[in-house]
Length: 400
Image 1: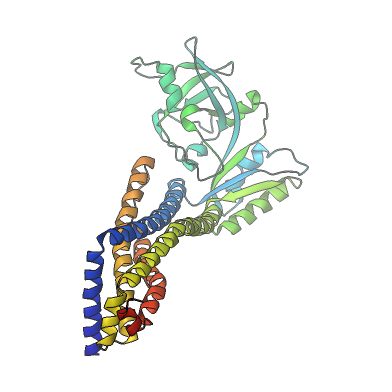
Image 2: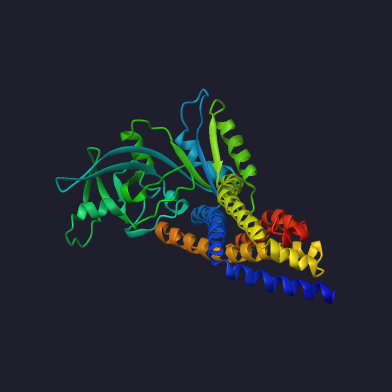
């Protein structure tokens, strides 16, 4: 055992000295491995970070979100408002349900145009389900049936102020698609999430009572219901209960139901495949770097034939020669791998700063990067090491 360790230590020192003497080749080999490992690290890390960003978007909205929309086909053309409003009370697995009737129109205030955007007919629960907060006033109330009150988004409010210092917009009259509404509330700014297939676009919208919107919307049927499931309820149970409720109320209605948990499960599967694909793309440059290492080691063997022959003549065994060149190859690739890990993390950090993503260090990607570098050194260094170990000492001393 002690002899083996002594031989390995001597081989390691000899390998390090050989790499030091051939500085240019060593640097070129390091650069190739650095680029390969940094590509793999950056690709895998970005895949993990993208998955985490998507997860955070779901968590910001809540993983209990359920989206109910009219599906393709079916005899019933739209979801009835009465059925949508009663959903939360009738289905135990649903705690809140917020139907929406949506249209588009032009907004005017004080005789001037202040924008064009979504006109969303909603109920009181729409604010809590979608986590909308108020800057001033109140949201649409269930007591506002058929009344002309409006809650305006932050960008619409800014346009109405027109850069002037206005104490309050509450009580003002805004013209929404040629209908006059009294401003009852102003929303805080709301960052739009893209995790779910429904967009609120609260900042550019005007919210009105859903019963009032039926008078002015071109399609008076409910466009979508945004609901929340009860704690501990599996998404398949919620979907089954919703379908059962609407089957009783509207037998010919086709529904398209999507839940956040269902989307998260799909996203996890897709992002896993995406991360593997990114890693595979990055591995192409790693293979190129490994081939470069093999070429460098083959040149090194050719240049050191006399040295190898002398060592063989002095009693070095084939496995001693083989281990020397394998150690040299592994030292080269692991050093390049460590530098590549640092370069890959730096590139990932720079991309995260540019995209405003949260930078995360994946311990798995770092460990796999160093492990892959060592594996590349062993794999691409074996053939040159094997060739060196089979060198005939006599032919080597004769320079043949």
